[in-house]
Image (cartoon, helix red, strand yellow):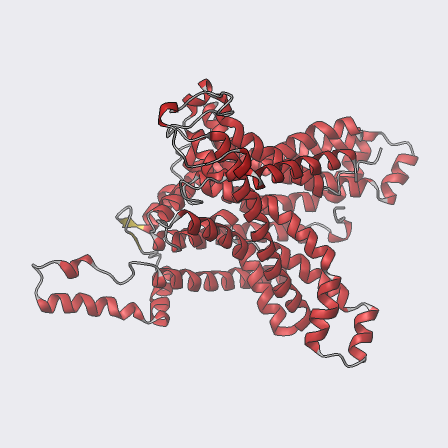
Length: 291
Length: 268
């Protein structure tokens, strides 16, 4: 367990460093970097303009720029957003709770719907019982998340449930395949041969051994849900991080966009780490690979 | 192949042929018929015209052509990058494998749309329509390699222990020849599967980008660009034929999924 924790901590740190470097490089190479409109201000003396140029020139070396960027990160300084004319940390502090709230509802809804339908499919094990959930999952997979958001907008339903519809088909397919694979294990056949009821077999001998991997799905769903949050927040006009990222992309506010991307990556990695730890905490010998 | 898969394949072929011969079926996607602004469906305009008087049916056919031609092109690019990186990671092993695996993990940790958005923002937004098409699909191809690379790496590792490769190595074949002549051709089934899996993913990603205004630029149509009309939802109530692009997109992606489907066998 400790080994996994250390490994994951190293992975997160490495990702943050590489992600930060990539981010800093993007900002450094992005259009408009190092340009200061004060240089065009005729009221400023030649010395003042020279001072502004020398301040900007400090960041022309990418290594120096990255070191300063990292130093800023350590002090919680994520830079300044040109579009919103506010510090990035302030914007994130304001919008992150909104997105995290939506994601919690969306992921919980998607997981619940996916698990319940997968359980029903495996319990009744007939083509008819498989057809309706498979059709629903297939349709949700075939609709772009932006269109799902539009649908929710037309129905005047909360956007967070749109995230649930994006997460659900992935959960359903994985959970169903995993439960089917577990159902075909010898111990399940033995339990059925001994005359145990379907529900008892399902919950005690199928869901139990598959539980760690089912729980790990929650971690994987975070990445999916974050991706879906951009079009959903934009279309339903939810003031979250997804909408912020879109505005930053449209206005080419790279410092803001890069910090959001690194932050989202770290949250995703943390969620995956929790899922891995949950898997390790459970007895891994009981786990079954999905078909 | 099951009957549903055959039907889905036939439907996909019909749609692909119709979009390829769009020039014969509907003359122009950008011509503006000023006397027919927002016209309802008719024999001349089967899906009516948009607010600029352009034939919606023609735009749908040309948009389908753009999406259905370029999504496979992007999938080809991403599969090539994945084959190269995933194959080399497993083949070279050691630090190379660690470095490439770290890269794959980094890409997989980034939510797909955030990555696309960040990369798209780096590139000019006011480009010509043709450049925007190339940029959009090039980005999809260049950024979508991580998941296939992980699978190809696993496949390559399995292959490396097979008898024919051990024989080839013992016979003194050069590493480059071993990689290109013996390893890659035997990875063909995995590469093909990864290619086909990427196509619907890229079609949907382009649609999402288009709806967010970061995809293909006007007046060139693509499914993403056509979906932008859906934002005007009060008009859709009076003009339900505006839903044709989304219906076609959903049916095509669903057909691709049906054709690709190998699982879903429920034991009775």
